[in-house]
Each structure stands twice: as structure tokens, then as C-alpha cells.
Amino acid sequence: MNAAAAATATRAEVEDFLFLEADLLDTWRLDEWLGLFADDGRYEIPTTDCPDGDPARNLFIVADSMPVLRGRVQRLKSIAAYSESPRSRTRRVVGNVRLHGAEGDALRVSANFIIQRVKNEVADSYCGRYDLLLRPTGEGLRFVRRRAVLDLDALRPQGRVSFIL
Amino acid sequence: MDGFDTRTGPLTGLLRDDPAAGVFRVNRRAMVDQTVFDAEMRTIFDRTWLYLGHESEVPKPGDFRTRSLAGRPLLLVRGEDGVVRAFLNVCPHRGATVCRERRGNAGSFTCFYHSWTFRNDGARMALPNDEAYSAEALPGPGFGLKPAPRQANYRGFVFVSFDPAAPSIEDHLAGARVYLDAVADQGEDGMEVIEGSQLYSARGNWKLLVENTIDFLHTVPVHQTYFKFLKDFGTDLSSGVSGRGFDLGNGHAVVAFKAGWGRPVARWEPSWGAAEKARIAKVREEVAARVGEARARVIADTDRNLCLFPNLLINDIMATVLRQVNPVAPGYMEITQWALAPKGEDPAARARRLHAFNTFLGPGGFATPDDIEAFEGCQRGFGAWREVEWSDYSRGYRTELDGPEDAIRSDHELQIRAFYRRWHDLVTARGARP
Picture 1 (cartoon, one colour):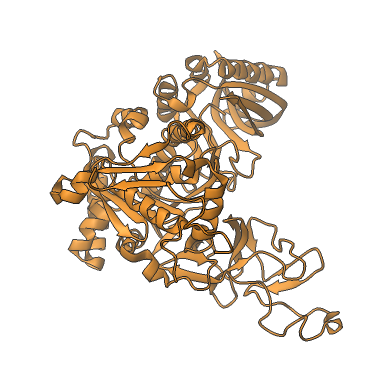
Picture 2 (cartoon, each protein chain N blue to C red):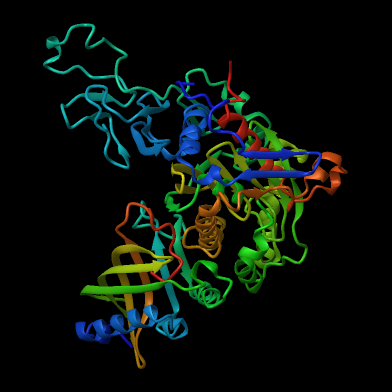
């Protein structure tokens, strides 16, 4: 689809897409979640002290191209991915969804997130914003860039991002 | 020791080191007890050299970083004179933290509480109301931010000690120097910390991170999913890992080894492609021309996981990780890690290095989260330290003592024993200076 079509996506359509995504992640339907990405998609989490970084030049927490992201999901489904086996429970609230116009053939979208991760009787909170590029296709919206930018100063005391943020 | 006599006091029975029996065990009380933790702070973190940061993190005059180490707020800053200094980031007037930014560039630092102001070499700047102080209350030039009592820049690595009587950094580093040199010598124009820090933590005792970083026995069971990922992406790990641990003195230790993955400086692996093979060969030639073939074999051809007692761990593998541990409580540590790389590195090689780092080594990688899960599981297990008292590090102990030398393997625990021996000597004050 072209940029003109991208510009026509409504906030309701984008919200439906993001709320479906949140549900897939909270219910650990990771293969279905992978299907929400374009083949050139990327999943990124910058470090907390370099939130505007470039993964080719800066250290990241996560900087996955699609082959790596597929490897990440495959790993997470293994019983030997011990940090998530047994799995944690997560509950995420995605809101403040805003559309910022077209960027190439995709739509630039921002949203806020608050995610609780619960494991071993400990609840950890992760808050931040999504910086997204969504490409409209005949099958619906697809992630071209899915960047989760944490508001935390550090992963303290959360310690890790072993689930999908 | 401040009225706390560790020799006859409560700190006994922490280590069982029985060479005749080939047994080396640490009592798990060492991982949970506040008394032990307090002793570690006083006898180790208040006394030995600690890694603070790398000079490349403050490249220009006025560049600064603030960090916390062993409970102290610290300021690492490059002065107008180009000298990198470490200060206690504390106002001498009333104690407020002076610089409240994590990083930046400043000609001077003003404490917002009462406006005391310090140049970026630490000297206090005169204020309009200064005549209200006596000369004794407000000494003249030179008075200002308190420098870390000892500080040393060893080949770009900035260390501090809070003990004015600490030995020289060279004496402290002992046998670890050659391994730190092997990291520092990888770049023709020196090394730099790549922008972006992985700041994380674990709900476990700080020693768990140290022993994990130089422990090979856990790698296959814990990281099988990562190794599968590497293999799926074309890395040939079939040759396994060959190598062994070394005791480098003063609690420093290393596992030096060779694995199937590629090293940015400079060991090619087939999945990188033929064109890259030629470029990596040039990188290796440059290293050999600069440091000689014998050292190039160590620097470029081999991997190492290095423990610089007590708080710096370096994984020099498919990327180079500087990992700093900061104990906060018996069951909680802060971890900060950085990627170190040659200045002026080829951009594609830099991107691949970062990719390798991100996928394996960080808090969002394919391996580190499982290590953290292991630490936290251990820490919960240590709750039963009175019933299940000992953690075992005996693997290969008889071989360490009886040889033959070439039977010492990377999955033996010689290197972990070296760390715990020094730890025990200090914490029970046996290693204290007279």
C-alpha cells in the first residue's frame, strides 16, 4: 500500500491492532504475535541512558531483525529459556495512542505502556513509550519498527527484559 | 578493625579449603548474612581498588559521568587540563550531591543547596560572601571537591580506592595485568566504550555474578538455547571449548580458552563470509605488527573471561564486555555493563560486534536473563543455609594440586577458588596489611 493509504488509517484501527497485540503477548501467543511483523520489521529496546540510539552504533538492550526475533520467540518457547520457564505473568496497559502521519509507506505512531511482570511472588513494573512504524497491508497493519523506550533510569530492580516488552 | 574483631568474632567457618581431601566449599551464610556483607564492605570495598569507568567515557574537557560505587556517589570528570579525575560527588559544605546529572559537559559544578561552586578540576570557586568565613573554616586554593583517596588510570581503565594506603594499581593487578593489556591492546588507536550502558540488577549476592562470569560448568546447561541460536545462524561450535583457568593473584582470575565463534579482534568464523575473512586477517596482521606474534596469538586468537577482584569482570569473547558489580545488600546487586571496542573500528564490524553483544550478553539477551534467574534461584535456596550449608567449588581441585598441568580444564573451578581464597583472606582480615 502507498503512503496515502497509510495516512488514512484511523486511530481506532491502530488501537485495535495494539490492543490485540497486547493480548497476544499477555497470553504468550508468540507465534501469532510474530505474524504482526513485516518481513523487514525490527523489535528494539534502547538502553536507558541512550534512548535515541542507533543499533549499528550504540549498545541496546534488544535490537532484533526478523531472523533474530524469530530466534528469540523460538527460544522463549523452549523449556530451557529458564528466565521465562516457568513463564512469568504479564499484564500490559497500552494507551495515549497518537498518530503522527506517514513515514514512507508506513504510519508513525506513539503510545504509552505500563507493564507488570509477576514471577516468584515479585511484581516488577516497566513503563515507557512505544515508537512505532506501522505499515498498512491487505491483511491489516504490520510492524516495521517496534521500539519500546523505557522511562526507567535502569533495570533496577527489574533486572532483565526476558519477556517481550 | 574499628572494634570489630573478625579474627575471633563471628566470621569463622565461612570456607572449607581442604587440599588433602580435594574439597573447597564456601558456607552459604556468606551469601545472606548482613554481618558478612558489612565485613565485605569494610575489608574489601572500602580498601581495594575498584573499577569506576573508562577514560573514553569523558573524551573532552568538561565531560563528566556520575556513578555510585560501594555506597558513594562519584563524579568522573575530565578537567580543562585534560586530566581525568574521580571525586566524591558530595558538597564539602553540607553534604548534598553536587552534580545531579548522569552525564554531560560542564566547566563548573554548582551545588544548588547553597551555591558552592567547583571547577571541573575540583577546586572551589570564590563566592561573594566568602569573607564571612575564617581562613580555617574555608581554606584557600586547592580546597574543593574531595578526590577519591586513590585513583589510577591504567591504560584507560580508571580505578579508585577509598583507602589512602592502598598499594599501587600495578601491584594490585598482579598477574591480571597481561590479560587487561590483552584487552587494551586490541585497537591501533586505543579502545573506547561504546555509547549506551546496560544498567541492571539481580536479586542475589554479588559474589554470584563474579563466580558465574568465570564459571564454565553452567554454560551448556543454562545457555543451550543461546548456543542453538548461534548454530542456527551458522556458527560452528562443534570443536567445543578448550582452555583452562588461572589464578592471577590478589583474587584476580581468568579462564583463557578458544571457542568456535568469531572474535572482532581478530578471529574469523565462516558465517561472516569470504570478504570478511580478508579484512579480519588484516586486523590480525596489524595487531601482530604492533605487539608481536606471540602476544597477537593471545590477544586475537583466544577468548578470556577475566575477574579483576572485586568488581570488574571482562568477557572478551564475540564482543568485549566490561561488567561492573556493585553490592547493595546481601541479596541484591547492581550490575552495569559496557561494550568496549577499538577506536575507529570498521562500521560493519562494529555493528556485528554490537549484534553479538546484544543477543548474548545483556539483560534482554538470550543468555544473561537465565543467569539472573539462576542467581535469584540460588539466593532463595540460600534461605536454607543453616540446613544445606555449603556451596561446592571442588571440581578439579586434585588436578590443580597434583597435575598434570595440561589436565586442568576450563570447566574446573580453579579460577573460582582463586577468587574465594582472596575474598576469605580479606573478609577474615588475614589479608589485611599490618
